[in-house]
Each structure stands twice: as C-alpha cells, then as structure tokens.
Amino acid sequence: MRIVRYQTADQQARFGWEAEGRVGPLSASPLGLYRRLELEHDLDKVKLLPPILPGKIIAVGRNYPLHAQEQSVEIPEIPIIFLKPLSAVIGPGEVIQLPPQSQHVEHEVELAVVMGKGGRWIRAQHALQHVLGYTIANDVTARDLQQRDNQWTRAKGFDTFCPIGPVIETELDTSDVLITCRVNGEMRQMSSTKEMVFSIPQLIAFISSVMTLDPGDLILTGTPSGVSELKNGDVLESEIEGIGILRNSVTSQSSIPPP
Image (tube, rainbow, N blue to C red; front, side, top):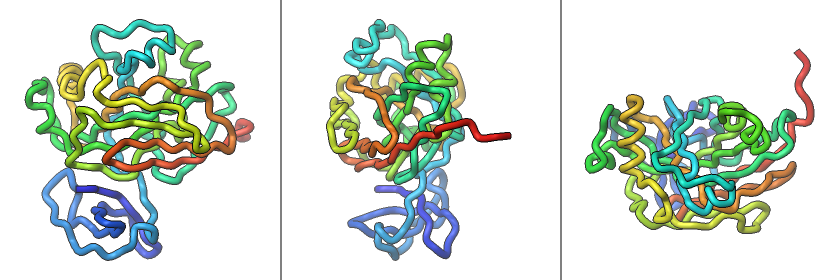
C-alpha cells in the first residue's frame, strides 16, 4: 500500500492512501488500527505533505563503499549514526534553502525506513516486523561545515535539509532497488540498495541497541556515491524504484534575517 499525508483546500492535513493516481483518506493514523476509505481525489488535485512527521530522525553515514571512497574515509566497521532535527523536514515540492553560513551544500539521496512498531534491542531477524514501510529522503549536507566541525549536527541540521516523500510504500523488497538522484535532469547518483555496507535489519538492530525506536521514527540508510553541489535555482529529483520521485527546488537564503 502507498500511504500519503495530504491536504485539500478545505481540509486539514490527514493520512491517506494512493492508488492509480487517486487519493483517499485513512480512518486513523497508519501507526495504529485504521481502515482505507473510498478514493475521492485525483492525486494532482491535493497537496502532498511529508508522509510522516517522525519523532526521531536517525541517519547513517558511509553506508555505501563508493561514497566513503569519494569522501576519502574508511568504510566503517560498525554503523555511524547521527541525528537530524525534526525542523529539517520538508515535503514534496517544497524548497531547500541554502544557508548563508555555508558555501558548499550537497545532495544525498537515501532510502528511509519508517518504523511501525517500536522496540529496544530488536533482533536483526525480527527487525522487518517493526517496519511500516519505506520512503525517499535527501540528507542535504553543508559539506564545508561538516569538514570544519568535529561533529555533524550543524552541517546536517539546517531547516529544509531533510526532504522526505512522496509516499510510504509498505510492500517494498529493499534487497536490490535502484536509487538515483538527478539535478536539473542530469544524473548525479545511481546505485542499488544491495551495495549497502549494513543491511536494514542490521541497522535497526544496531540503532535499537543504543536507543528505543518508536513508531514513526525515521532511519536514513546512507547515500551512494555521486554527491555534488547544489546551487540556487536547481531542481532536485530523488528517485527510488518502487516508491517514486521526490522533487524539490533549491534557493539561496542570501543573508541572515534581522532580529
């Protein structure tokens, strides 16, 4: 099933489901018990929102060997994890803002795992039972600040630096799906999830050994090689086979607003 969050001109945001270009509401949050209601809107007549508002965003670094190579760093022996703030989340069609503090911002397309059932010390062999589904994310990164700081919070944490969407696909086999990123129609990143250093069950097991995972939490599973600089006016298309395309435009925030 393809889960969305959407808004019409006369309604508040709500969860829904999408099929064959039509959208219908869910009776309740997909994180609990719900029913699918009748398809009632054309997809192009509603505003798609981030498909989930996560409690936590846990991201994984250097989980594709060629990306580690292009960053001139070693492939990790255990997963490298970090947090992105919830204020970084934007949805399909929204604008990534390049902050004035950075001179070099890059895209990082990623498969994102949406947790459906929480837990601590989740075993890898049971991990997928805790997953609601999968969506697309882009771990936008101020690369110059990442290289300058001793930790990654500032570089990864600016507002608008976590586009997600357009849907949550609940029935995706993630063992070998194509993941790509285009900027202004030009291919920049292309790989398969089979190239991950650590699999999704391994990541869930590792992260849940550190912190409790809650329903709705988002895990960003790492980016392939090919990351490149974003410029004012760019159009970013993050695509994952079986999920769809997440489109976002890019604009420069030219100065710091006055107090």
